[in-house]
Length: 392
Ligand SMILES: *Cc1c(COP(=O)(O)O)cnc(C)c1O
Image 1 (tube, rainbow, N blue to C red):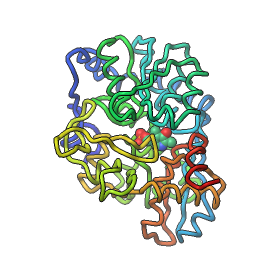
Image 2 (cartoon, helix red, strand yellow):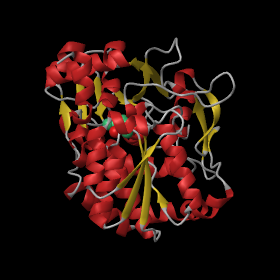
Image 3 (cartoon, rainbow, N blue to C red):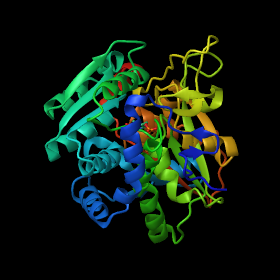
Image 4 (tube, rainbow, N blue to C red):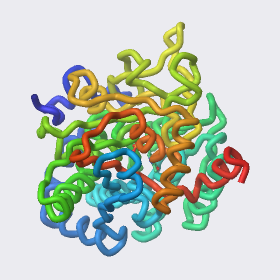
């Protein structure tokens, strides 16, 4: 099996580039040049240096003794929450802004859900002196106020989006609309979604996560391959990064955890792999949540970063081929997992990452298994949610 994108931009039946004519020239240019740029010694050197000295990589791979004892196995946490700005999003932001600069673009536009991608983008734009506009659903502006303030502090313009449900899908819609009207801007997509080549660009830039896991496991466990890699899925960028260098290692089981909201028996969830059907959203074919009329459905999750009705095409393909295992974590399960990690290991995770941790009680492990959970971000931005939900 080949799990990498093919020359037409597809992962099996998923992917492609379904775009308006206005964007064709831009996307064609990007498609033509991105591999050569990302593989160039100049890019690699600059990217590696910024990841190290600016983002603070490598992020630790931490053996979690109390969590391991609880689940009777060997659990490691990949500490993406320790990156500058508090999540894995900075890896992609640094990489794509270097790519944009190489393509001659000086205005960066981005969408954001939880605000982590907006903050990462605003941060790197500030550092490199580029103009930055971030589209964010009005509901998310409210529930992630800390990140809105950070973006403004960094000098970015935040555009609240009131159309639709006022969440991530609506922000992506508006960012695309702006890009159609201003093709000279660079649209810095924050997840492994969108038209080809974005899913591949994001996966390559985030693949530093699994490259580090391999090296760190070799040093700490004497073997490069874990038995399981577990990650939460919004659009799929942290999962793509955590899986990337294990895709062809069939012995490594890849576990994708979707946001189950109030439960998948109802309509209030964001579980596009479990409950979605094939369709096109934001420029690519993937698994999408539709309503009975064939309209894209309003998703729901307590986590703004997972509150998206689609999923990246790579992940649809991994699930479709059976390469991955798909699990669902409800709001309640994620909240419990967040409290558990906080009180067993002293690490307060982002509510998104808590969904990955909520896979642990749903799985059966052997004592000798090596389980890696990607802790995609830290919980500071979610403290108002935790305070409210736990009555602290
Ligand atoms: C954005 C975000 C996610 C979800 O996005 P993916 O592209 O699926 O990784 C998960 N965790 C955190 C902390 C985030 O900020």
